[in-house]
Image (cartoon, rainbow, N blue to C red):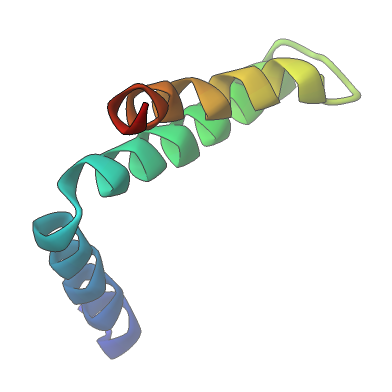
Length: 69
């Protein structure tokens, strides 16, 4: 594994230990965004639907909002 990738993985694992819920929410949001962009492109949509994308990215953070209320 390259040194940059290894450093990134170590930082991710450190954040996962220190702030598990926040790290998982961010990870879920990023993966959801990537999968939605790929799905939109594969379905033939020429212009990305940013509202749809934003809703998929924001949804994992709802757990964090509920905890802090």
